[in-house]
Amino acid sequence: MVQLNELLDVLKEKEVSGPQDIEIKGINYVSERVEEGSLFVAIKGFRTDGHLFINEALLKGARAVVVEKKVPLGEGVTGILVPDTRKALALLADRFYYHPSKRLKLIGITGTNGKTTTSYLIEAILTANRKRCGLLGTIAHKIGGKTIPAQITTPESLDLQRYFSQLVEKRIRYAVMEVSSHSLELFRIEKVKFSIAVFTNLSIDHLDFHQTIDAYLEAKTGLFKRLAKRAFAVINIDDPRSKYIKERTPCSILTYGIEKEADIRARDIELSLKGSSFRVKTNQGDLDINLPLPGRHNVYNALAAIGVCSLLKIPPSAIKKGLERVKSIPGRFERIDEGQDFSVIVDYAHTDDALERVLVTCRELTKGRIILVFGCGGDRDRSKRPLMGEVAARCSDYTIITNDNPRSEEPLSIASSIEVGMERGNGRYTIILDREEAIRKALEEAALGDLVLIAGKGHETTQTIGTQVLPFDDREVARRILRERERDRRDGEANGW
Image (cartoon, rainbow, N blue to C red; front, side, top):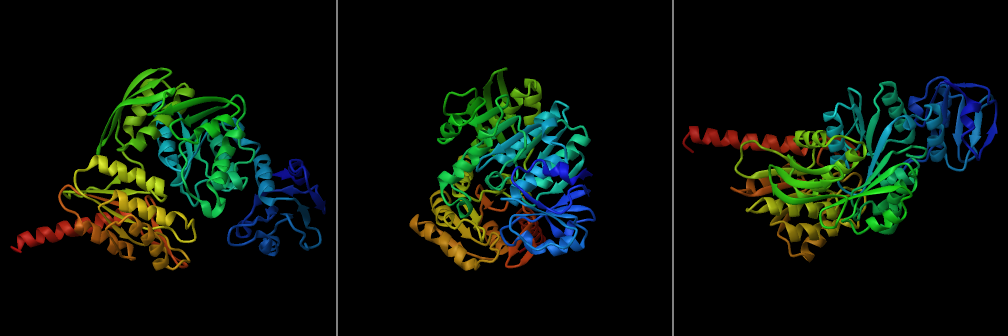
């Protein structure tokens, strides 16, 4: 609880009408969650506008409202007019929760691919060194012993500050979070103090929002521009856009990579479907790592985690122990093993670059054919659809184009855009829009030594078709179909079929 006038001190540009000497019990930007004595901040979303729900917020007991356009308010209600309500929300939330990120060792990870895995690896290393760590990201938010399924990669500023406050209350000193490009543009991390920021890589994504790759890069660079001089940046030097970010980073930089000379560099890399082994040069000496996660891309993710934890003065023994304990990351090159004589992998890859990386990894790890199942999300960046089709044509032996989350778009229209790239690359493919049937077809097609890659949805447990959000988990669907196949095989043998 805080006085409104104390809260409003953080807003430099504002016009206030109504009393300011009132107590504010909470802040909210969702009218349904407003309680008596709240401050309601009307922000514009992608589908609706919080200004349309001000009356509902007032009926629920809001005592003050922050707006960015003049609207009529009832008598006795305090109105605060600001240039941008999203930025105001971030500033107010930070003040309401007493600047919690300043009391944390906060690690922010940005980039197109690898954010989730890198965050889990850092958490594992810190845990191995008996340090309690919060985690905020695409799959879930972990606050102490509580796990909250994530709706978006980086929470809205108010939710983010509340999570930070809960970590502080639980005396958790460390936190690692994924920082999306959307969050950087929409002020979600305004006033958040990072101790370390990580850049993984950058490729085409979210152009429906950013419009150009240069604008996307600039958004990502925003995380590093805001770092304090006493902070650190951990940067993948092998990515061609790392130079741009390095030149705009005001603090000390630790580099990692495989190809170029770096502070943290891997060599003697050996890859298999069971994992990756490599030797890494660090500022604390050399380490031999046996990472249970397959793929060259996971070597990069491990290097980022090693870089972060070396800056946090974590002993090499705990770094090695933490990395070697991680058996899998939900929906990230996750193996589905029901005893079949071919490999099945589920991965979140949903950009052309991510899909190519995972397919190249598959090619390195299997001698048989690669059978790919994937689609593209509706109401999202359309430019990547033919590009993903080209990658599929070039890097797989047979592709089944299917639904991802078509949302409000016509599924066949999405598939046709992918098909353009498939035909450009002369790929062998078919279209089966029903995702379960597409997965079934792929598993039926697979033979001894082949690899089936189910890409795009990874850890997701629902599928959005039109306005319906339906239960759907690629991993569980694949497991069920494989079990059915094995049961049918046994029944056939028992009956002499």
